[in-house]
Picture 1 (cartoon, rainbow, N blue to C red):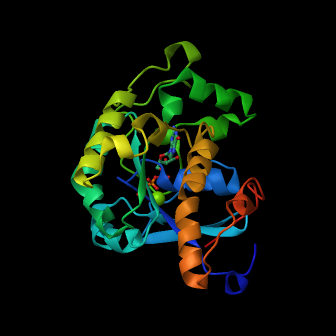
Picture 2 (spheres, rainbow, N blue to C red; picture 1 turned 45 degrees about the vertical axis):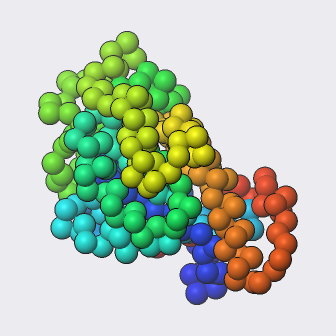
Length: 263
Ligand SMILES: Nc1nc2c(ncn2[C@@H]2O[C@H](COP(=O)(O)OP(=O)(O)OP(=O)(O)O)[C@@H](O)[C@H]2O)c(=O)[nH]1
Ligand SMILES: [Mg+2]
């Protein structure tokens, strides 16, 4: 792990928000460490550093618990992208994004981009679950939300756990939020921000369904966003260095899988 003191200041900031238990920390672990790990409910916030080509991206994980709500706008300050995360099996977690988390992004950059992410797709989507079976995960790693050990949590995914791992033929259980619901929320976010839909990134590109557990769509989420924030990175760097020109080719396709530091 690179020493933080030797690392350059991050060029751009991405923040992940959403209700407790939706899987924000798990998504970050899956992306950064390539693993689905046991998590503890986040206290305050934490950040990860990702090297993306020649740039450093800081990704801020936040706590979904109500008691840390006051810190949210601080974590969003200066963000170039916000990942608004819900749990596809929990309708309330989508509603909370609008009711509780959207206003926190008032401190983000004016040109901040927004992704709406429905996590835990492995619980509802055969394709997302299939990856788990192909991944060579152990039965232990495949256990669901409700069976994990560690700090007790209030399970929001399902009121009652299934008796056995969900079979591919029966995975459409408990899906409470459709893509259309997420896309409709994206439209409302644009309106809240005073943005025209026609001049903004389209909803179908900015709404993702992911599984931190199987890895489904996780790389696509982060890497699509990183590519989208590059103009913001370049603008910031130009402002900082006072350079009138930037080389857009410089940042394409290099070091995409570079290891990142986290703390
Ligand atoms: N089935 C399934 N469970 C998941 C997935 N992602 C996370 N979980 C489980 O959901 C629970 C909460 O995950 P976290 O990543 O800690 O959730 P969080 O959003 O960071 O929660 P806070 O830190 O409290 O805000 C844990 O039991 C995870 O194992 C997923 O993609 N699929
Ligand atoms: Mg967390």
